[in-house]
Image (cartoon, rainbow, N blue to C red; front, side, top):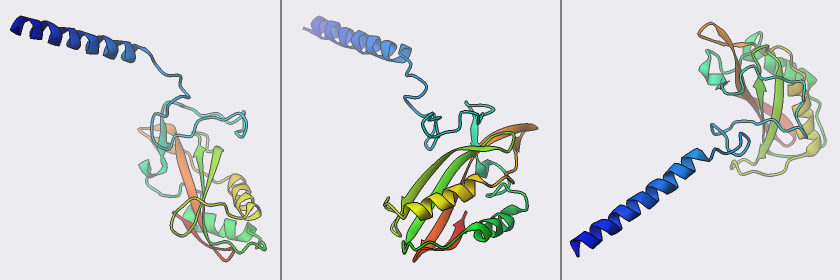
Length: 174
């Protein structure tokens, strides 16, 4: 009886080991999984094909560097530029519009993604005119700084979140 239990246990261990080995050998395609939460993979339908990432395997987060906003003249300059370009629409929306993107090691931007939320941070649809205007304003900024770590230029993720109250631009974060 004990001999039979040992044989059964060894069979199960071997079966589990075989399944584990097979699973480890089958590698998913690059686009099937993201390496890190929040990775922005290239989408040929919406992304500029000329935008190049310097190291696709290592895109830093903006907070890996010294400033939350890596922009010439810092956040004050960026906020002033955006407010100067922003035109009031007839939208009366309330909520947040977040634009997330990559700044490559040359200081160029691409792979823009937009999320809109209500005041409870639940995803909702806000005015298309308002959302598109802010996206285009962000895309047109040319003052992004090159990320640098350990003496090398680095790609990084950056985001801007716009607080909207009655269709008016109230705040820009971070």
